[in-house]
Image (cartoon, rainbow, N blue to C red; front, side, top):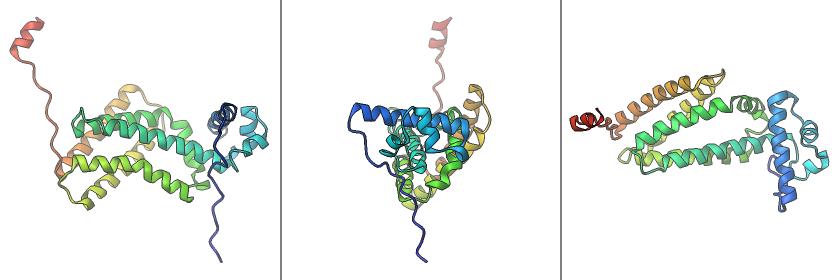
Length: 227
């Protein structure tokens, strides 16, 4: 028996005109609302079209099925995460471990802010997770972190860097999901992210990363000047 092929999840076409772009944007906005309100089990193209105020036929011009809509939402989330990661990890104005701390806080905060939709997307993942497009998107999301690992562990073997990257990405994703399962206050988020970053930094230092430099203590002259 030949293996079952996954349903197509790529968009049928990309909008070329402002009107078409507005239609796709309305569909995606409506999809987020339906997903948050109805959950993955009751998510249908008909409900999305109704919420967006467009016909199902118009929706099908751009998305062949509900899996394509859900995958687009997931892809957009992955793209936002990749942009966030790259913006922080490529900031050479900060030492590598300081970038990592900033990334952990930004990621955990983002997970908490988007917990409702992220949970619903996780429930819908069986519709698209085995499709080749999903694997490609996940690989792109992880690439920025692997590049960063060359900066933070320049003298480590490539296998060590790969293992460290996989461990940290899996941990960040797993604990972010678990922590964001209930509402959190900003102070809770900051404290949790700091503790997680402490663990990551200690692990990387053990592997050969340059330790963090303590913040400089104010001089007597500076203290006197504030008096």
